[in-house]
Image (cartoon, rainbow, N blue to C red; front, side, top):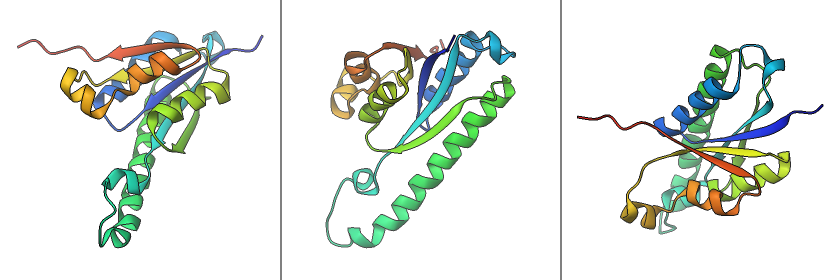
Length: 158
């Protein structure tokens, strides 16, 4: 019997890595044959033009440097994800970097892999910041064609 697919969306935030760690801890055991899921980890790499958010004079000279930085970030995200998986003895995960907006990339990954679960971290933005920046988790909860699990990092009480 083929395993269900679980897609985990990652960016370079602590919230995102917490969601991956939580998922590995709760759904994946040290013996891969006992896990009910096949794991696919997806990082959405924005375009350099999107990242700088402007196309004024001189932007053409900056784009290659921004793109290089985005590639380095993507490599760092995947390397850290691989380390977390290896530490939990999850050695058969699939890792992907896909160019584009995270909302669309994650929903497309669900379709591509026929995932039954999408896991995303929550940044815990307030209403104003969420309205300005948009919420990947909110978008995916409404548009992904599978169940969406939003993992929240516990707040530290003062």
